[in-house]
Image (cartoon, rainbow, N blue to C red; front, side, top):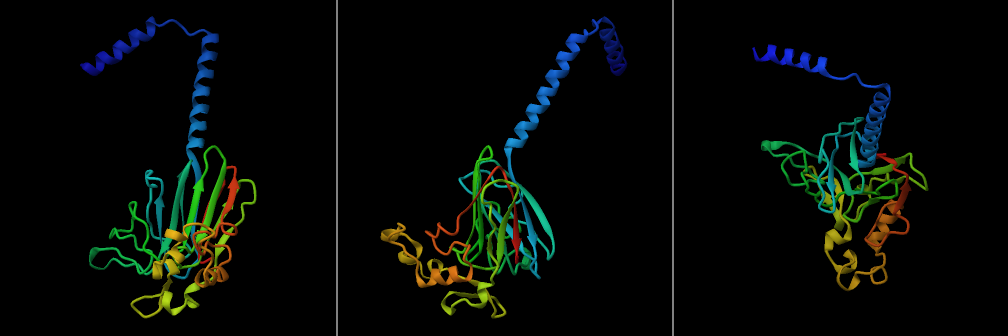
Length: 269
């Protein structure tokens, strides 16, 4: 009965309504169009960039993501990327954070762990945790309103696998930053991290290995002048000239692109 009454009531209401004039119809149409245009504009502004991950390694990589500045984490903070596979994530405007690849991962005993880059959650998702050192990093800062983005590849925390970051679209220099060399093969013995099989799976930076201020650019060495390159950072720079080799390696290692570019991070480029 309630349903029947609702239908009859609706019919009565429609019969009592006055017809809409052509002028009013045009106004309503324009208001609706402006509403949807405004919604589309806001959606466009809110999305800062799209990052696509490609795995060209001959082994599976488990990328991890970490949002900085105490902002909300991305929709995926970790996932599996089989050889030849791709995956994409959207970055909001005014976003800053890092990405890395985990290697040698397994789920033994119900707890997910990795030989390198492990984020300590016991899961594939990193849930706001950073990766254990050593790990090669991609760092991206997305500007608001199509301003200037900053991005780089960093070995400041050491190296675990080759990777690169490139841009699509945008304007400016927008060059690819890459560390395609497998530094593990040339890593000095005092910096080596070995896996359970005895193979070198990572190469620590001097800061990670020794923790001294002259390597970490801390304490009395916290300026560019008082923290020059060391033999260890020069080793990393020789292996991968594009990548950060220590904290003040800005001149040759920071890359920029404006106009809302998208990004591709490639493992084993």
